Length: 275
Image (cartoon, rainbow, N blue to C red; front, side):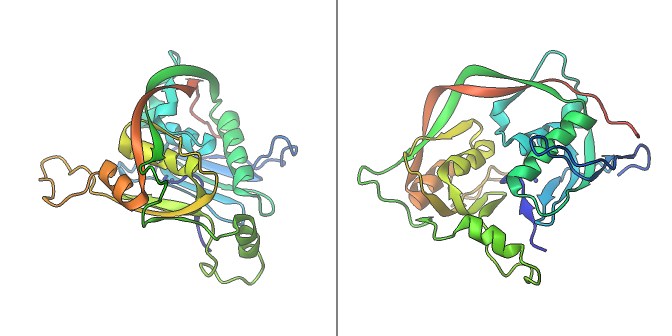
């Protein structure tokens, strides 16, 4: 079955505490998973992943709570800050989560279920605030508004593609669905609005990125750049920076600005216990 990242990646072992909570599905205005299992992950591995499948299953592997919050609430790193009472383990302790919803919920419904899972099981308490910070505006690079060769208006019907993938008997991977994937020095999207694409640039850009192109269509994009070298490694002589790649490949530009950012403050959380 084709796996879909809940967030553009964005995207979980110990034999100690295992928290498994079968539950009655919540009301329509507060959807919850039918069953969810949470385990602390003590592997020491630096890699993490969060995936969702069209059958209502979410699997997170070796993911800290702050990354789970980012996935559930669709946040850029710069949009999330820690309150004075937030415990340090939110960014250090890692978790494995397996959760299953009834039916075939939409990605939006599954994110809502993940949000409610974090609130219920981690006792997550948050609030919103507005702070002015250094940011990048994603703007058109050319006066004639021409796009680059790796940015095209998408022909995908996202809603129809999701519905088609859920048809019984569909062969996994045979239907292209809207979304995206990211890796070291690459971001690829299909049928994604530039407002979402801008968010995916934030980790590499090191600042909050917001869309200021004025373009409202959905786009297919294929961006490749040379990431910063690992510590001690030499930079490739023919490397292409993120900023150059965005301009040459997409016909866009990152424009530095001071901007008010709606930040998401984690006030407090508790480690889940067996129940």
